[in-house]
Amino acid sequence: MERGAMGLAMCPLCSDDEDIEFVRAVDDGRRVVKHRCGYEWEHGEPSPSKKRSYSFNDLKARFPKPEDVEPEWLERATRLKTQYLATKPGFDPEVAAYWEKYEKIFSPEGLRTCAPRLLKDFANSDVGAHPGNQATFNSAWNAMGDTAAAEATRQTTEYLLYGPDDVPLEDRLQQLLADAKPFAMTGFKEALLTRALCVVQPERFLTILKYTTQACGKREMARMVYELELPAPESVNWTLGRLILWSNDLLHALVGEGFANQQHSAAFLWWAKDQLGRLP
Image (cartoon, rainbow, N blue to C red; front, side, top):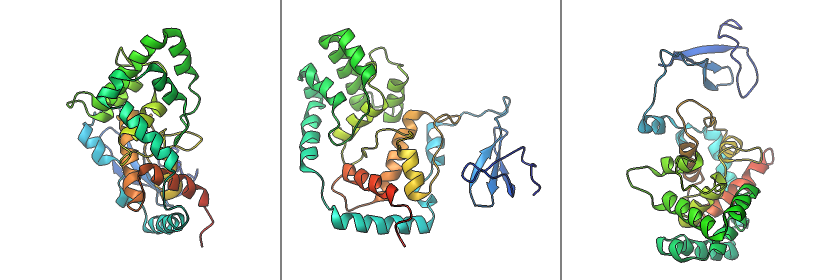
């Protein structure tokens, strides 16, 4: 097709506007286009008259899947996994003991009875997964006082982990991220909420605490290790809560078996992303 026919479409991966072809129309007025490198994306702005709200299940079905990874990238990741497990087959026992301790603290009974200090310490610990600077949380805690801050943190954690079954975990997470619940603890956001999930469900959740960040989140990890592009958090219809969980489960499926738990899997991914160009 002629250059410019797609209305200044440019490949997000290659930053090139040559050889872009139309693939199909989207219900909201945008068009799916494809660059010569093979990457496809939705181009244009949704038409106000054609905007469509996708259901939870529709969006989940549209989220990238393990089978979307090109075979050569799967093969590369498998070789890296074999190399990694040959030298680091286990998981740090000190970290395992810490997770076990907080798994008890974050049980329904533990949340009701634990000392406030344990909750504040969790937010500021980097054992097993570094949550970054928690100045907002600490300032809010100090301003509220131990009793009120601990109660807000308890309610926040309890709602995330044990909230009503008719609200999916993805949406409970989003409600807390968006301060849609009056009890949501200030500063107890994505990294800490994800860290709590890692502690309570270590067989599911990887210790990659952000969806996207310059320091490498799940979105960047999928791109660097598997050459798989995940939705931008600002994309229409998605919510960050859903993207956080669905990207976690995608990476969980891609790394596969052989790891002690998903913290061990995450350690592999952190290592694997730095191996670009080091395999034949």
